[in-house]
Length: 126
Image (tube, rainbow, N blue to C red):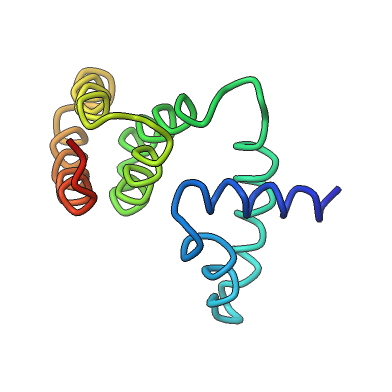
């Protein structure tokens, strides 16, 4: 089962971030971080993102909202890129971040906009 979870996790990571964000990222991990990369691949992406009840587009939107709520700017930037790969539009990301202003607080939303915009610009998101 674990090998299946790992393979599913690698497949999902590759769909979201390309080969550099999947097996190559695991392979490049230091000895210190390798176990974390394996855990994230198996359980975050294989066991959770691999479930079929929610599509990846919906999971991306939920993940971005939760990362705003937690104030996790770096991870938000990573997941903005993944969301674009999963079909979330720039306008939808803007709406999620605006919605977060009410439920997570204006400072959290301001920081989220500051994090998301350069990622969207880099990706040429329209």
